[in-house]
Image 1 (spheres, one colour):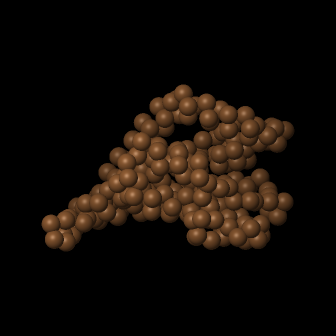
Image 2 (cartoon, one colour):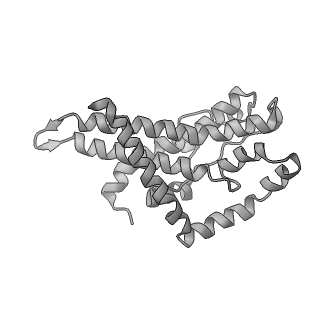
Image 3 (cartoon, rainbow, N blue to C red):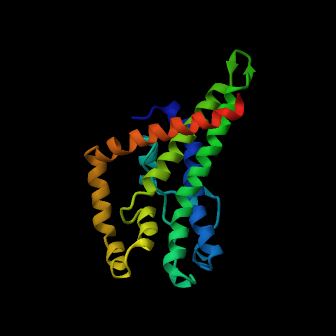
Length: 213
């Protein structure tokens, strides 16, 4: 279980990460000609509009696996539906990758400071929040890029499948959800994702540290 102190640290990162992920889907869809996200009130950075209780809870507990309320998108508005749907789907995880980079830079910046109020070095808890931001956003990007319907990765990879396979592949959403649930409950998903997450987190923090040497 996550204790209260860790929950308080994770909460603002969680809200920002999930909100930006879903906003990015909606914003890119809007740019590509779909008015649905705007009509549904999802072109907003208000986290309440985007949060899914169980997805947020999963992200708090795992710091890697989570989801938000999907933004409604109608590909019939796109000029090139398969291509534009792939771009729209990729926008969410890519926003998390960019946010992870920003948190990594912030982490090194805060560690280079010596901010002290009384006897408390306030840069330390802020640096920890930034570190959690790196982990959570990389975790969201990795998890959502998995090519299992209904995750974002499935809507990206479908663009590269033969036309005769595409619709049937996306119809596997219910089966895909059960597969994800099985992998999560058996621990297979964690055993697969956590080594990747650890490697990429260390790699990102290592490369971004060069700007503060």
